[in-house]
Image 1 (cartoon, rainbow, N blue to C red):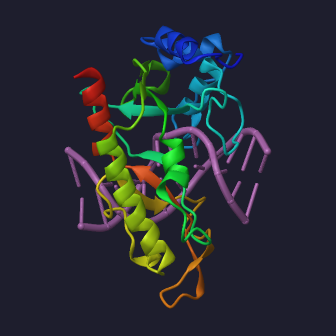
Image 2 (image 1 turned 180 degrees about the vertical axis):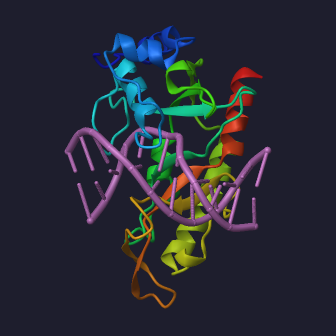
Length: 220
DNA sequence: ATTTGATCATGT
DNA sequence: ACATGATCAAAT
């Protein structure tokens, strides 16, 4: 699939997918459907990237670089609520102590997002999960403010050696959680006395309650 | 070794 | 029931 040349074209492609099951789409794209996502956790996201013409591969770029738009699949239950938090990006644990919010990866990644809900309760076989109606989102000033507040608080803690006191419960809408191959993977960070320490790599995630609000706004 | 795509699975 | 902490695979 060639990259979409405009947001309109992207959304037309996106809306054409609504109602399809993952199995139907996979068949059109000649992809095999895994029995479950225990191993291929990113399978759904990669299938939809391919279907919409996102630039392949895992570059540190938006999925649609020409449009500056990021694609996020959003697993939802039968009530339309998010089943999971949404991963945003890795958290820089060193060397970013005086980065501003507007320069941050979180802000840039979330500046323009195509949310694509997928009915994905665990008791539904992967092939039978249904693609929903995608919608474009740009944070309102109120949403920006919430995100910025959480980001600044978390980044301060990271810079001041508080990373080992941060848990998922920190933040109203944005949280910091492990993002690693396993609990033994380590990366460099700042310790409580400013010394270098080894700690788990972390990522920023949007809490499910926040994405639920986005769904409510988009669909009532 | 890191970033992309995330979901799994346990603890509360 | 739900969120937090743990984990998996592909691409680079």
